[in-house]
Amino acid sequence: MAEIVVVESKQAAGELVALKIRGLIESRADTVLGLATGSTPLPVYAALAQSLRKNPMDVSRVRGFALDEYVGLPEGHPESYRTVITRDVVRPLGLTPTLICVPNGEIETLEHAGADYERAIEAAGGIDLQILGIGRTGHLGFNEPGSSFASLTRVKTLAPKSRADNARFFASPDEVPRHCITQGLGTIRRARHLVLLAFGAEKAAAIAAAVEGPVTASQPGSAIQLHEHVTVVLDPPAAAALANLDYYRYIWANKPAWQGI
Ligand code: F6R
Image 1: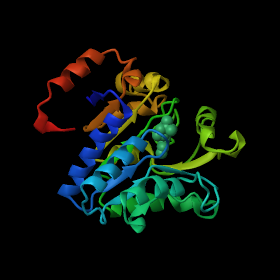
Image 2 (image 1 turned 30 degrees about the horizontal axis):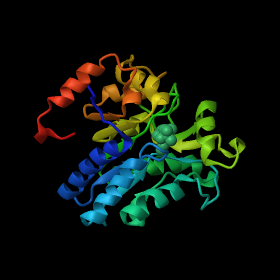
Image 3 (image 1 turned 180 degrees about the horizontal axis):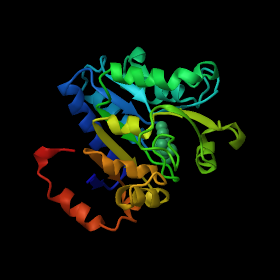
Image 4 (image 1 turned 120 degrees about the horizontal axis):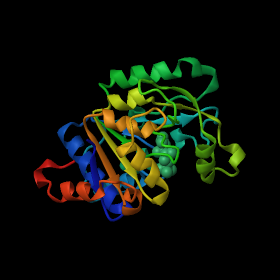
């Protein structure tokens, strides 16, 4: 069962996950991180950046793989995930840019971009900790409902709901690309530790389906139930639809401090 942690705020969630990542890097300087974009992981990146400013450590060998990228955005587009990862993660954390990979969304090389990305992840020894958000459609990465649990990095078509949700980052809704290249659910499931975060009431239904619903391709988030090490970090509104919420809170309250997440 996934470990469900309900914290009071996004900041508290960010601090909890940042502490875990620090510990990983302390134990292995070339830790491989799976990096989500969107709004959800920002408190994690902010808390980690703050912690590194307060208490510096060598992160120059940390490697990273973004979850996904839009197809067909021109290089340097402010909302391409390459740009976002550079702005929100690489620079504030002081990571080495050449060690951070993002799927290649250029149309000319799309045919083999997924296989190239899979090879790069494998060559790095796999992902140690994968940070995840969840879409209102239940998507992980951009694996919309119906995605195979065995899927690897490939091109997908964004659901209209996901395009509408992401329109807030673009000048107009029409500018949101229709296609993306995303790590598959199979790729995500190979990461050694999944950390799924969600904040706000609009994520409550997707979280309940992912954690407690049937395991089904119609709810891509439910793929987490097939993984042996998953931590789900929620604020109270995102946790509100969980049937066994009291039990999850009880488990967390009684967890020995030495266990960590
Ligand atoms: C981001 C990603 C998506 C987002 C999801 C939630 O790389 O793959 O699955 O995590 O769409 O987006 P936010 O966090 O903006 O609510």
